[in-house]
Length: 216
Image (cartoon, rainbow, N blue to C red):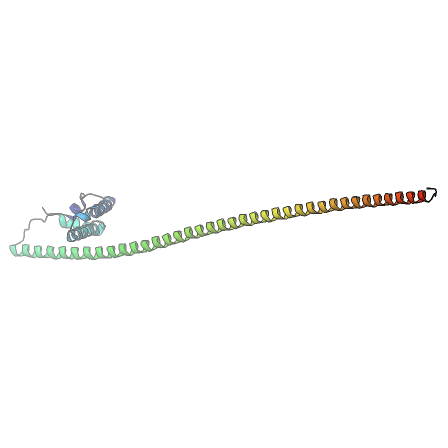
């Protein structure tokens, strides 16, 4: 029994358009999984058969023509010569149908290839844009972290500077206080020394007056 395009897609002849498309995708996916176990030539033959079957059955006009070609030929009631002519006509019609199917398939395939190419370019541009956005976000985050670290470093340096200034100020205050205390102590000592010297002079004057017999 001759294998039909329905057999190629593993569907029945009453399958609807959705079933045809679903079957085609399933067969393509199956072929992709089995590609490693097939020779390149066998894989190309199966792929071409699937595409030709879908090109015809996926188009309602082409499918109707193909279904009509599957109908059994009526018994010829004409003469032997007329039967030969009818067979020739049918062969020509079949050739025309095949040529039309091939042309339709080629147009559909070219259209699908162009759509896939456009979609691939769109996906690539979206991927590049997303990568650029992610890179910009990472750079912005890195810049924020760097600015934050620099700000903290400046704050720490300012705190160290203020602490050093406060230490120097306290040291200067202590030195000034020590100098004041020392000066006051020196002044007290000088006054005490002057008082003692004055007292000694007074005592010496009294003794001198006493020696001279003068009243104190």
